[in-house]
Amino acid sequence: MSNESGEIQRLRRTIKQLSDQMIRSKEQEERILTEFSDMNNELVTLQRLLAKNNNSLEAARQQAVDAGDSKIAFIAGISHDFRTPLNGILGMAEMLKLSPLSEEQENSVSVIQDATKLLLKLIEDLLDLSKLEAGQMRLELGEVDLQETINYIVRLLEPQVRKNGNQLSIDCDPRISTLLEGDSTRITQILINLIQNANKFTSEGTVRIRVALMKDDEITQMIRFEVEDTGIGISEEDQNQLFQPYVQTERGRSSEYGGTGLGLSICKSLVTLMEGQIGVDSQEGEGSTFWFELTLGKKDGNQSVASAQEHQGQDMDDEAPSVSVLLADDNVINRQLVMLQLKKLGITQVDAVVNGEEAIAAFLSKKYSLILMDYMMPVMDGLEATCKIRSIEMDEMRHTTPIIAMTGNVMQGEKDKCMEAGMNDFIGKPFTLEILSKMIEKWQQSSEPTEVLNMSIVHEIAELNTDGDRTLLGMLLDMYRTDTPGKIEVLRRHIVSGDHVAATEVAHDLKSGSLSLGIRYLSTLFAQIEQFAKEGQSRKAEPLLDALLPAYQAACAALQRVSKD
Image 1 (tube, rainbow, N blue to C red):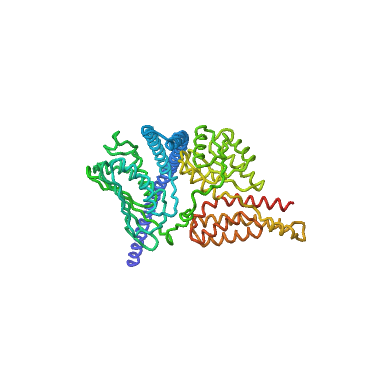
Image 2 (image 1 turned 90 degrees about the vertical axis):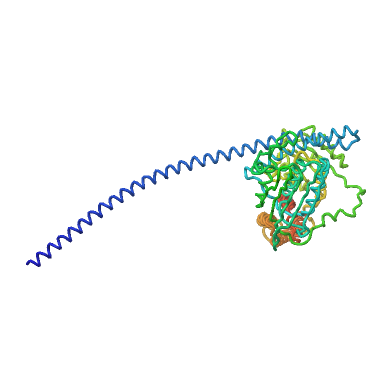
């Protein structure tokens, strides 16, 4: 029994120990659950605070976006208001300088031009800065001929450099490819800014431009651009903050040099946008070297000189074709200026109107080679007038008349509105005689009348009636309308992305389909795009894209009329 009693006691102790352990485990579990509940409550509280903070941050972000949009709209409006009188001042000064003047009068006109160009530069800097800050600056990739770019900059700036008593020298690495791919306009803008800075802070010295090949592979080249001067130099303290907006060196802030401190900041932003680097090496009193490095894509083939050769060998004394222009602008100064510029270009058939309604009335009464349309006018603005003119052309099966927008608002959004309204091109105020001449030459060449339809083919199709109530022409037109707009959009994407092979195939398909229906003018556009794509020069086809939809609509309207008849 003793053994049995001892066993029972051990069993009781074991049961008690297990019970104690279970009780302690239960207590620990309850404690953990309590702690977990407290932590969960804290987490819920944090989540609420986080949601509240997120709402506050989103509201602040939206407020900042709205403020940025308002700022850009304000600066764009101010830019337009400034550019209109600037266009008159700069243009009239240009025309005045072409007339016989005494030396004193010529110097006075030069001062007017220099002051106006400086004011225009300040406006452009403010616009660029606003677009960069808002993330609205977009690169325009295309062919970059660095040798031609440098030559252009030298022709443009050498008179300024010599006026300051400086010598301009060029050193361009011959290993650099003749044609590269990048944003030629922005590269030119950066170089001009750096060279003008170097010249401004240098007197009786040297400004040297170096363009060197840093890296070379199968598809890209890394190029280093340097602008070296022998001017006043920059202290180490000033170098650390040089590329910030509105920041100038201590000497740069003096009235002797002027400026706003925006140029270098814009250069840095543009280089960063192109995924490059920019910097400066300088010692005070010993000159400066500003540099930037960019990686540019290689273009296939050699330099395209076909465009330049087209004009070689032509007799400049040949009589130019007659050009008639409709000018729509509500500002009397601008009208007088543009009419003087056109007269200087030998264009005397010019009708001037002051609003969109008058422009439409003039368009209905007479055929014009070109329309210069102001963006902002009373009664009816340029956008609405253009839409109505395009509608009239489509209804009456007229050939599309090139319409060029003229405005002081040069923001990308305004350009897009002009293109959407049916305008063909865009010229920002103020513009020089040379710019106007190139624009007219560009669109005069493409404005020769072309038949919308090949009526002999259309009549052949119209005579082939089907067994049903509808004509074969009507059925084919419906099929054409179903497929063509989508294919045009696909073609646009291939052209913009530079997919030459795909663009060639789609353009050929659209050309063949159009020809089979007797659509003459639109098929010639597709043929031109196909040829550019075959040659690997899709970029040259981009100006034709805007003409496709109006030409397509005009062709469909014309076929619809024939089908009903």
